[in-house]
Length: 421
Image (cartoon, rainbow, N blue to C red; front, top):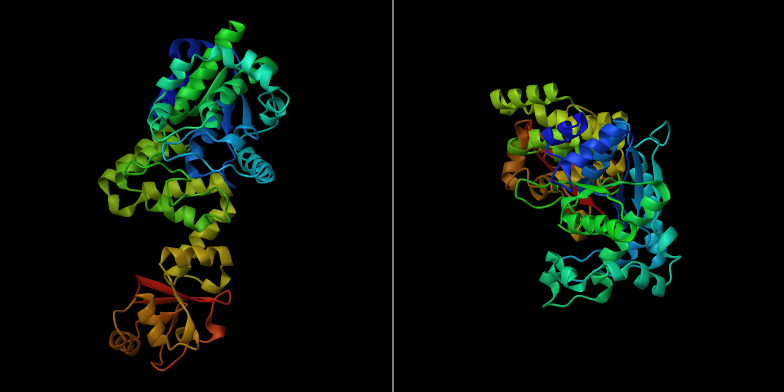
């Protein structure tokens, strides 16, 4: 095989490919123009999309040219999903999402040099084709019986699927055909859940032009429970720092399970085989040190948000447990900390100059008021990392971080928080 494909295979990044031998020959023959697409069905890409973005960067670093497609047209439709038909978002909203996602995706590849990336939007060609031309030039190549056999379509036939969703595969296939004609694109990379759409594009090019092109699918990034890192799966982890702060992103991967951490490092980091194998050995020998998890968290935050943001996330983690100044943290990071410790919002009378004893109980760091008083008397209770010495003290506005947050701690490790609106 080709050295690039060998590396992708070692990392577990090849879930499907149309013809491994032909793809190896393509890579060996010279620079390949390839594309990966993202639909703007929300305001931000999520961590699951890192698989495609990082794979695109790996291919570019090997000398191949990426086309990054953000689907201004397909995003107006949305691909079928098992749970039911997607909401049709306003065109103006989708256009805004296109711009934001283009900015996010652009940070993962280079737009300079001989393998310079190019940003493309399928609205540029989809908006120019008439319904008649679309049916004549694209639709005629799609046998309905084969479309009905597609797993997602078959699963929706009983509950109902609109013609709009049913036709999504034609729009995505048109993307590959247009990019092949316009830029000489001969490879599409995407997630394995899009394999049916991807291979439909390969077939369309063969039927429409007689040319043979390739496809490569990466596996889905899965949590230990087998669920996807998708925005519709609940608990999304986002690339947008206003939706998932660098601190929260760092903590998320710092808490990766031992059973998944080496897999994540292979898929998502640019560490060498030797470095990852050494981290695997250290994890087996001393899992409690969580060395691989820290390497993973550092690598991802460095990649997504930069080294400065990662250092800020580490500072926040230290401050949370009394090894730094909480007051130095910005509001988004404080908000992430509050979510991390399951902070409780105080309202009504509880929010009007609450006693610190009451706040300690409300935050969950002690089970009762008597336990709170005992913790204070023993010198083990803290407000924003400052030791509480008065059992009758109240939580004033001056004590609140960013005007609304308070971090309560008992001892070294039991941390909670309250929020006062």
